[in-house]
Image (cartoon, rainbow, N blue to C red; front, top):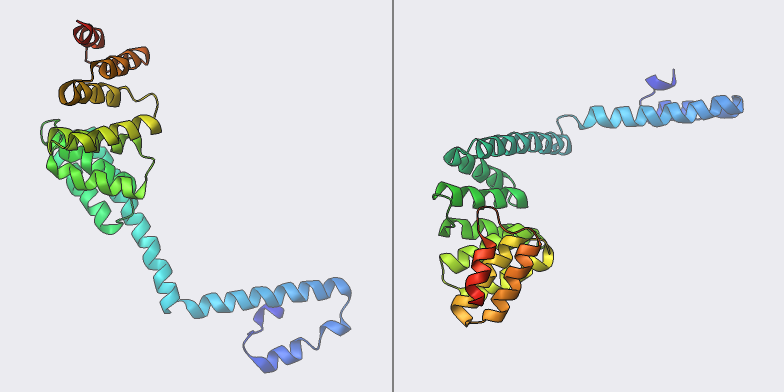
Length: 219
């Protein structure tokens, strides 16, 4: 009986709330629960199709679309289909400009699409990623490489490489790249040697001969 009460039918409520005084204590509890559930059910039914309900459904649809685009982008990235990966990640950030990882992946995909080199197209994605996630070490390191190799902004690159190392003390690639800036742009050989020693101690960089570079610096 209680579930059939329309909580916004005030006459029914007046009559209904006259009952509890004549009911045992436990029945009064069930009565209160029933009225509460009836109110909730009524609100849900009334909200369907209303602006709030439409907004909830729209948000659910956006999240599902974002998940699909992210899955598409990472799948194409893993297959090294860079054009398709770029398109998917561009759609990701168009749908949600606050998706820091999508910005990062877009920057990486641009670089790989350009032959595995860092390029100007990667600048904005990495910058946006860092703005959203200031502790993203890889984005700092990769943006530093864009500044160094593409824009020839060595001071800016040095600052970002140092930040990447601060955020991720085991990041060997940032040490290697920073050592080249110290050597080539500042003639800071002791500084470059120290970075390479740290790089080697931490395991070095895959595909690069750290011992040979260190020997050259010390020669």
